[in-house]
Length: 582
Ligand SMILES: [Zn+2]
Image (cartoon, rainbow, N blue to C red; front, side, top):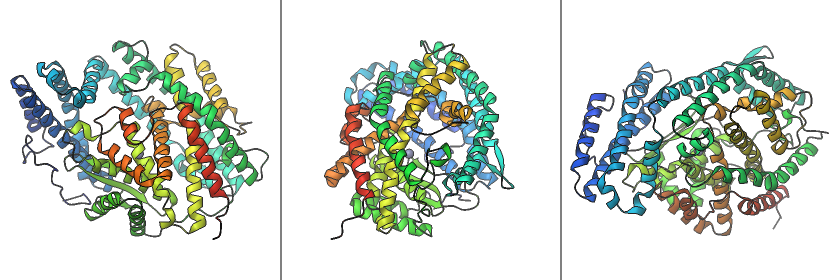
């Protein structure tokens, strides 16, 4: 039974190494290919043979990667199919754990290969750098610690996912409570907010304990790998070759100096519009002018055809990419029973094709997600011509430039969905969201910088460090009477528990996206040329080179942020004043 929304896809290039008839769910068949690669390496006598060996190893990785994606897609499209779930779990439990050490072994063999020095330096620079980190950080004694780390992470997820409240006679999860913060009725908002925040606060002790266990593990992992603290280990293991903790601290400062003033201005405006003496934590999600939510479409087909209209106006290359995805049914966008929640873009690495999964229900957020995931899909299509598997994927800091730029560029043609006043509102709200998320991003980042560079700190010291950051980046929101909730606010941020340090990437990428958009306001044609060119580089160049190709600075200091904030400010003002008649 085919549980996929699309037909079987052919590999982009015919396989040269992996047999056509292989069963990628059968480990012995896969193991035989790893054996072959290991045996072949010493027999490579020329640089060309070594390159072929690398391409073949990549071909195998791409086939495995695609198999994992296909099984994940089938499962998320059919959560009610035990067959799909079984197939997915089989791959995660039986294939991936076997494949990982074998891929690590290949990296090791490659790094020690005498012919490696003969390969063109510039072409292999990024590849070599990544292989070196993979090998350098590997410690067998860390493997069980990492297993324990993911077990504790699951515990966090289980705890946060299990929390519910009784609201107006119904049991609701905390995620379901979020939409009440958009209600115009202030008393209702406050009730919903207090209920949710209190529920989380009841578990504060458990969250702290869970985190302290994670912290102890991480410090041990770092020491085992020969690092003085987890901060320096994390920068290395996340492949952050092109920026340092000091750059991040500069970023935090730049947000404080350049972005906090505009955040405070926006908050003051919100307060006036809502006619309040002070903004409280439950006043931040409601539309300050009490307007009904935007209603961009009825049916998902309308969302698709209107999105197509946006790309038709934006760029012929992107338009035909999107048409291709529609034709090949690489979009599964409607919300229906039996689908997993959320939205994602997944790349089918052998076919070199993207797939977009969503649960569209007719709200504006769907349009934003559609544009965002389309940006990721364009990235995948742009790298089709790259034959080295490892270079078809870029670092996350740049992947999100591809997607976040598309939100900004697409919004310029949002009239495909809305009449004029609503179109202006959509653009305005988007820019406002971009600005107001920066302080939270750097709060989460700076907090972790503090935590992982203060070994042996106490719970009280950690709490104070968090409160200091809330003072710097919390803006003008009145928390009186809710001091405990404020001090424990970080418990809700999953990344701190599960993906340490993985958050600042969104801020870095947003700065790139804003620059792409700023360039497009000067010359759309040129900005899109640069966008295409940068995406096509995949992961073959270091981050600063990818940013440069896209027409951006890879820099997160005040120098880069200041003019962007000025631009956003002026655009917001323009969008607020009624359009000139003419
Ligand atoms: Zn994304």
